[in-house]
Length: 109
Image (tube, rainbow, N blue to C red; front, side, top):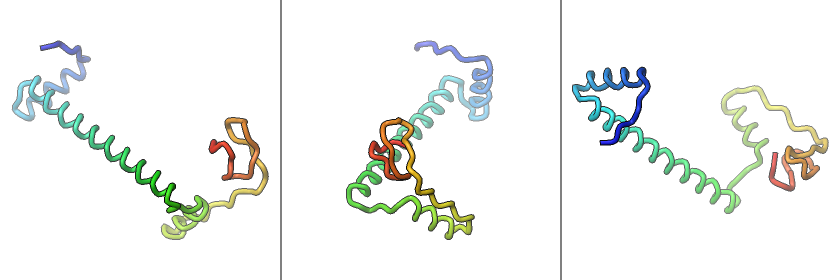
């Protein structure tokens, strides 16, 4: 078995964790690591699927302007109405285009 160095605080936590579960520290670490890695894998899968669904929505035109979404959200939750963006021209953070707010040619911010 390969040795993995642990900080003293982490070793104490592991020993307490193992003791509460009636396991030796190696078995407790293996269980905890397996649970975490499965959770992390599932989280990754769900994030990728959410991004894929969002991309498909954009490709299919199932979107709405952010100002409409924010106004609807504010009404639904009785929040203060957001200010409407001013109509002055602005430059994106990349410095490559000058445009109206929300319509930057580069897609940048």
